Amino acid sequence: MKFIVFFLLFNTLFANQGVEAYKNHDYQKAITFWQKDIRSNQYEKSELFFNIGNAYFKQKKYVEAILFYNKSLKANYNNLKAKTNLDLAIEKQKISEFTIQNDFLDFFKRLVYFFKLHHLQWIIIFCFWCLSGIFILNRFYPFPKKRIFTLFFLTMLILASVNLYFLYQFQNAEKKAIVKEPTEGFEDINLTKSKKNFKGGETIEIIDQLKNASQIKINDGQILWISNSKIYNI
Image 1 (cartoon, rainbow, N blue to C red):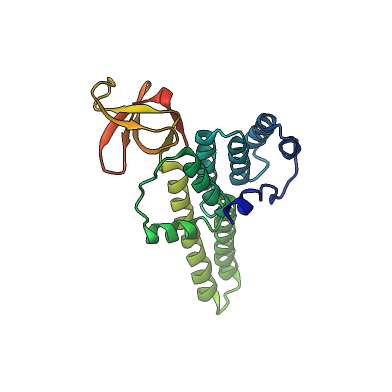
Image 2 (spheres, one colour):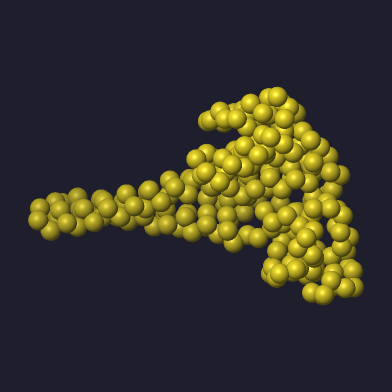
């Protein structure tokens, strides 16, 4: 079943040169086209990241595949194809992701990602103008159901604003990275006193990022430092 899901690459709303290159097994060329599409902001980013992850997977570049599947999920947490293929890439890379499943957080993120960013922005604008129209209309032509309409649009405005806030937090405040290749995590910013060995493809949480090194937090709570040249930022 997992392998069937893996090949659902073309379940997208657009066809482009990247798809043709992928069909012709020219995966690096497909990646180049899709990266251009990302910069153009014309297409769904989650799908583009997912496609790039698939192209890297086909080349057996599992670390890069893990990176782009994570990028796909950051753009759209409800992209089930990316979740399935991420598990496949992690399995191929032979790493263990020791994460504690928080069912409430998982449900909450699914709920937050139900609406896309631009949808929420339009809902907020629409509710704002409706509220403005109600107050202006009521000033000249008072109507009995003003309170009901006001309460409805005000509730929608608040809910959409809260949703937008959390969506922004999940997409921008969470700083994670993927380890490029086997490397070490160090005790201090000077990258001395090795404390842990990392495998390529492991996911780490960024606490602070300086020019040459990043302060990271791993699943057991340890705070370490790692060279920026050894990680891909998600």
